[in-house]
Length: 198
Image (cartoon, rainbow, N blue to C red; front, side, top):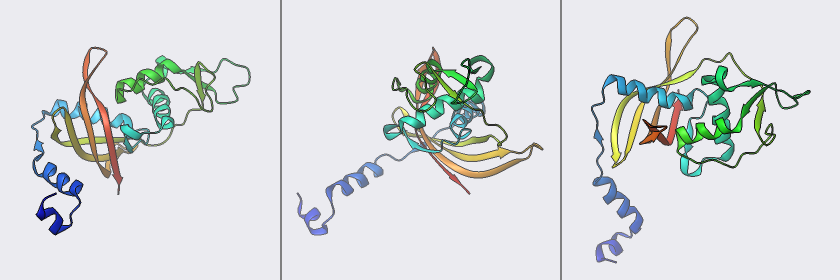
């Protein structure tokens, strides 16, 4: 360890972090409006179900399952959601096959999820009750930066549109994602999302 480090009594990991930060100045990218719109739609898939503070490295299993269920409820209701076929339906009147939960997690998180479980899961499908009425929470990506090779940092607004069509900004966000190909199409997989509601 050098004399300077000993003299300053600075932990080596702090010095390394500072050096790394100094050498990785993020470049703001010139993204076309249609691509910004696609990015905004991608991130809105998380905010519309209230998933606004997570990191893929340590996201809870229950949050992934919750995403898989409610993403399909909001975006694929007619094609994937069915009525419960059992007599009593103790866990809810609606049903979603576990394969659709798996697909949604793979599509947005790039995680091959197999650990299906929890209340309402019968081994094949998830049973639940619907919930409507809340205004959808959406994102507007305003700036995109090259974080490190193969990763982007996106920042912008979190907003709602009320029943009269009026847009209200209710917060801001910072999200990290990387380019990803799913089902032969170019998209992104989320790395982390941090939303701040005003």
